[in-house]
Image 1 (cartoon, rainbow, N blue to C red):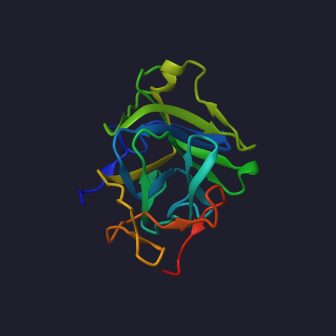
Image 2: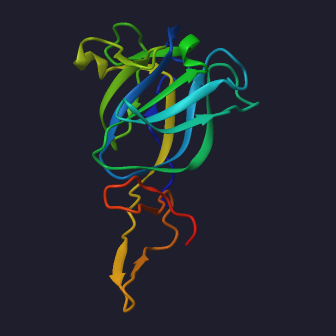
Image 3: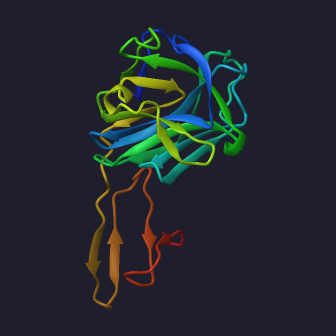
Length: 219
């Protein structure tokens, strides 16, 4: 595997932007240009030394389906104004699929998230940021207390230049999809095989072609 890469680069530091707060939570969307494997998630915590035990980092498919929730991300050595992060079980992100990452305090309905504002145009903040080359179609979002999303700016071009920090993650590049092989045996059964150590993937099955799929653990 390759070394973990940072989703966001912050030349002015994690606390370089203008500080403020937002009702609900903060986030940003992206489309991987290659298959990725998320290895850690984190967030900027301005309010509490050691991190916020009520912080929830969520990775969404698009902006309407939760892929993974991460809670309990704290670090006793982290100071207020630093990124607090933790390793997570490897999570595959598929090339060409839209995703969003957000952070909020629980419960979302009363969450107020303190963060740092970055603006690559320099209109609202002198602090700038860079998105990793493997992440295309960046857009900044507010996760509203009712669970819906709103862009930070109504101007979609400017919205690509804004960041409310907020959440971030690290990843590894080029995680291949495992190949599933199906072969018929001589007793009218089928044999499924796949490569070993297919990190981040699991086998699912259904009793019917159009039925609901569930994880298979007894094999």
